[in-house]
Length: 373
Ligand SMILES: NC(=O)c1ccc[n+]([C@@H]2O[C@H](COP(=O)([O-])OP(=O)(O)OC[C@H]3O[C@@H](n4cnc5c(N)ncnc54)[C@H](OP(=O)(O)O)[C@@H]3O)[C@@H](O)[C@H]2O)c1
Ligand SMILES: [Mg+2]
Image 1 (cartoon, rainbow, N blue to C red):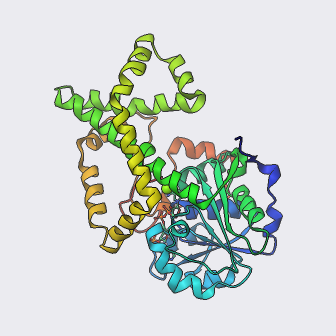
Image 2 (image 1 turned 30 degrees about the horizontal axis):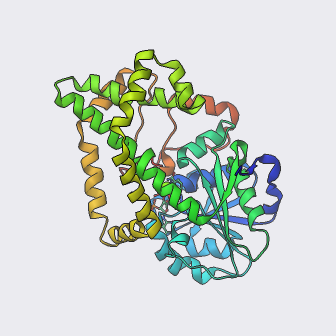
Image 3 (image 1 turned 180 degrees about the horizontal axis):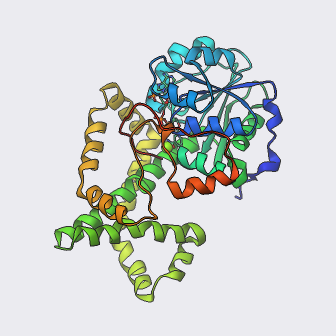
């Protein structure tokens, strides 16, 4: 069944006239939505907790920053741009007591609503606008006159305007430039989690590391292994992104094509697919969500130690050295807040030509955190 794709002409930002939009949190998604909506002409305020390291960054980018509860009180549409596991506490403490009939709660991932870690009252609209890309790319593409495709969904609609609000928000962040699809909270949550676990983040990083380790353990140099298993991946994926798998195969050699179609299915085989199905089942049953919330409540111990081990893997050292030899691959700093992450130099100058309004400034407090999906 073909789905309807909404574009700029299907959405009207006038619905935000005289309204205040609050973005709670100024991280990867939050800063991108806030800046894009502001530059699309909407009135946006930022809600943060008192000691948040994001406060200064948001102020430097020209926003009025208030406490989370105050932002909820003042706003008509409230975007909960807080990490999924931390949303329920903020909801109980600052959001729920200040929600009133007619307000709209907006999410960019359906986790809290779908798994019921947040249960909003019936008299507020609950909607989803989920760009299908990391926050930094949502911001970068907007400044370049482009947009990241987005999903919208309506969970509750007492105002009867919920879908128009979601479409207008999607337009304000640049999503309708690329195309917007309507889905449900359930479908967005389950497919998003599956994609990032099995293919985009988890599947890809595991595949790259296994390939790198296989070559290094066989005595090949780490530099060779890095080029082969990580660097070239982007070039191949760019071709798939432009023209599909067949389009990528059009550009590679006959020998590569033969290896692709005969050996690929031995690496990712029926067993892999069986495990993918099990992963999907854990997502659908709520087991993954339950375990993740437990990990958060236990202080993120395993989460932090696995990420730290990843950072120490020799592929990172090799990569750092090789990328520094390629002047067109810009050095990126992963220190500091999400919102202070700067686009690579080469892309900054391209960006300046289109929408130079907001002055970027490096963030104050360093905090090791990688740009993420
Ligand atoms: N990252 C992505 O590209 C992406 C993509 C699609 C969907 N999403 C969804 O977007 C949502 C936000 O994720 P994110 O990755 O953008 O988060 P993030 O980068 O980790 O940023 C979270 C922000 O929330 C702030 N915060 C934490 N507790 C708060 C509270 N109680 N009140 C107000 N602000 C608070 C943080 O402040 P501090 O700086 O002080 O910690 C930070 O500014 C999640 O639902 C996620 O699933 C994210
Ligand atoms: Mg996600």
